[in-house]
Length: 212
Image 1 (spheres, rainbow, N blue to C red):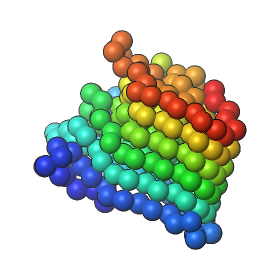
Image 2 (tube, rainbow, N blue to C red):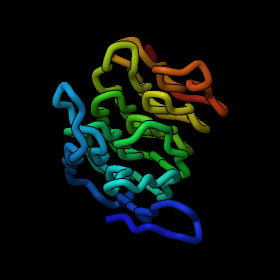
Image 3 (spheres, rainbow, N blue to C red):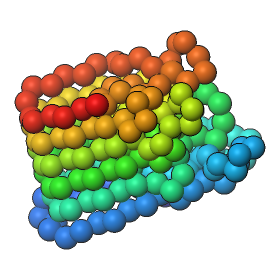
Image 4 (cartoon, rainbow, N blue to C red):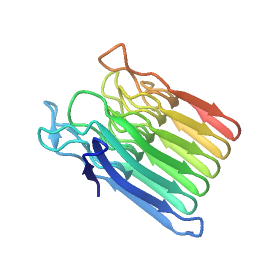
């Protein structure tokens, strides 16, 4: 679960760790969310692994905190709503969510599929990418379906979300934005505005990478 932290001005889902010694299989699916728009799409959904939906009635949680460590095993994560496969949940209000979520993948076989307008690894819809580090493993990350011109990155920000700080030092990585709305690695689409879709920093020191 996640708790509102008044001192930090946001929600903190704590630390999630899959240890190096783990050799099993994890299938994790985030919830669909409870805020609906005219076409029936649900927003405010949770990530497969990471944050829940960033909405609570009329309240808007502007910052999300947490730490995710994946060091082994076979991990498959997705969202029935607009959360990232691994990372932040989606927002049910207009205005992006600042992500201070840290994701480290050092080993294992990891598949992360984002929900509607969300990144595979990083931000849910309307959420920044946070801090993402990949040092090893076999990692496949795909953004969820786009809503018109709005969509997330394979690894990085969700729709209208900044890419965050992304460092890749190793591993075999495939990162796809399936509807060409966001980057393979980087920012989500800018959606409605011209001042979204920036990348804080991308550093690639190694690995075998396919991005598109």
